[in-house]
Image 1 (cartoon, rainbow, N blue to C red):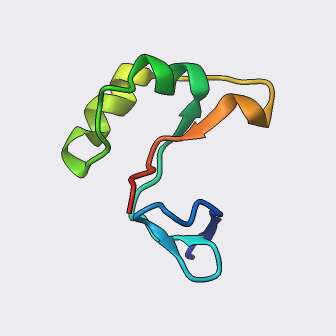
Image 2 (cartoon, rainbow, N blue to C red; image 1 turned 30 degrees about the horizontal axis):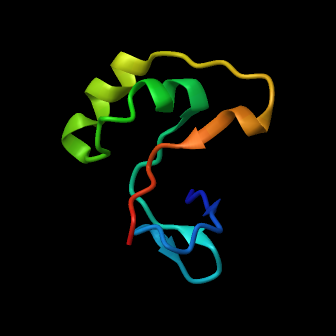
Amino acid sequence: MATNVSCTVSNCYFWAKDNICVADNILITADKAAGDHSEMNWDRESQENLIQKIGETPTHRVIETACYTFRTR
């Protein structure tokens, strides 16, 4: 079963028609974790290391989350 991820960031490499994210893998994390690891680039090779490094990132509000998969088109 395919999952659709909606995204309105039209200048993202993975953005597609009808506001759909077409990335094979998507990493969503807490803003704090994204800020702590902002020097890392999102690519397939570093995905597992990044997820291990970040660990769990509980939040309380949607505004505290970030899509780490973003890459400028």
